[in-house]
Image 1 (cartoon, rainbow, N blue to C red):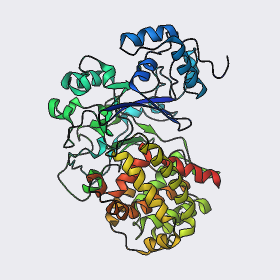
Image 2 (cartoon, rainbow, N blue to C red):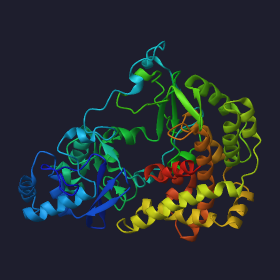
Image 3 (cartoon, helix red, strand yellow):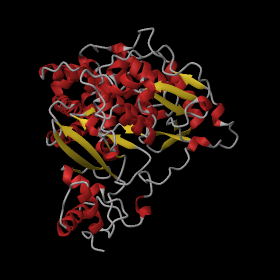
Image 4 (cartoon, helix red, strand yellow):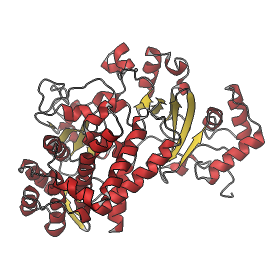
Length: 488
């Protein structure tokens, strides 16, 4: 088959995300290829045609199915449309196994932690270790419902949402008017809600969740109910921490009387809802390029680090700790360098800031082509691009690094939550991840000047660290760190 010849029964590949957006009253469907970062914008008629391509119909059958939905097309035009998608690498093969892997629509493999490791007790008996001295005060202004690219609903949650709010996008009787599949175009385990000007379609104008208002907290999807709590099984316990990705999280620091991260009646992993995503630390942790440690060694060292005195400048401490790990590994001497760090070197930060600027600026240009000017994600991309561009000036960066940190308590909490939840350990070696987090803090320090210059007063801007965190993870900017690491 020619690379530009579509399969006989075409379907959108599983590595392509289709997301419906309403910009004002104009409907757009954006195809996002997660492998390449490519974006393709479709109109409603084209999307109806594509959504009928579920891998069971040939092109003639697709045209007939689309016509029943009011989207009329001639077969030659539909064939040309699918040929363009095929040439762009956006279609899957006839064999449904072609996309097997992380994006497969097939039933997922059992989580790594569902079976005890050799010599370990049943993971369900592991205690839940909750981040101490923190409770959440939600301001109800919907910042977290306006920044992410996807908000997931399982089939029952989507049906309940449409029953509670049948008026939203007239979706009471038609699932596809409000939701698109999580991946590809065939029915799968999760759906993604449409966004209006970058906001969840079920979010009311004043920033409150209409599902919560109509049906109580249980009416919201599980991900919304558990956000911003994170769960990581480290082989000894399940660390329950918080993702610092919403202004409410940092505004809650030091304030008693909020909602607990977890119902105190839940004490072991087996008490948790089985649908909750619980990450598992790998058997060996990559501490630095070419250097690893066992999970037990990392967990023990991480506890000592969490108990250490926070440095006067958290970003400088993270950078110094990264160098120490590469020199001597998981030692107490490395922790001592974290507590008494060297000042941040503008030259060492420069390649990291340049790489982040490149990604943010590219994303800002792409977003400007289709996102609403009211879209928080679009504005956040531009703010980060502007901040990193400004920090590319050595004099400005040097002045920022010499200035007193405006919110040291926020930076210390950011680190405490990350350490407790093992959120620094992931695809990158730990030393690179530490530098990445230091860069995020430096960018967050510069953001208020950029936001003030733009005349913004969005509540999400009140806590720049959270805005940077949500933008980087939620919109793929965090890949910049891998670029720097690969460049050496």
